[in-house]
Image (cartoon, rainbow, N blue to C red; front, top):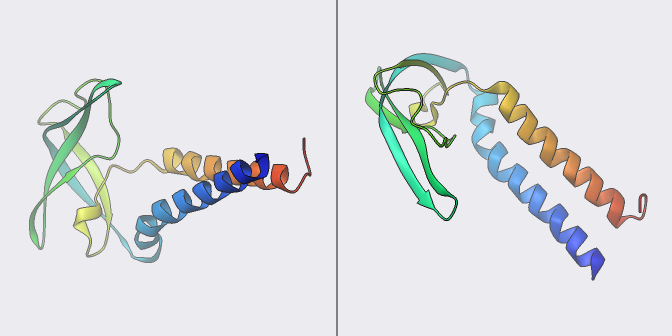
Amino acid sequence: MRQVFIWAGVALCQFSLVIIARRDWLRLTLPSRRVIGRVTGHRIKRDSDGTGFSATYGFETEGGHHEVIDQVISTVRQPPEGTLVELTHPAGHPDLARPPRPLMWAAVYAFLLGLTGLLVALGLGLID
């Protein structure tokens, strides 16, 4: 039964990596565009853990006006409404604009890869 949970964990980590990497693939293969967005408001998310806020950014490109919602949820409304924020997006995909956070995303990938390695080692009996 232990092996089932270990290999299910490996599958879950790999599935998570594929889902995250699918969007980041465009960021890696297409030229990056930088735009300045203005915080136009905050999206509210309520759940059992409380209330969270995600900033919404409005910006202009050659294709017109765009609005995107930040992927990071905070317990406070930050940055304040009206703040100018640098956003990056793959060329031709302004819907994927977000504030650049390379260290955060590197940590997410490192965690998922490290956890996969740990679970594989457990599953193969290399560690107890």
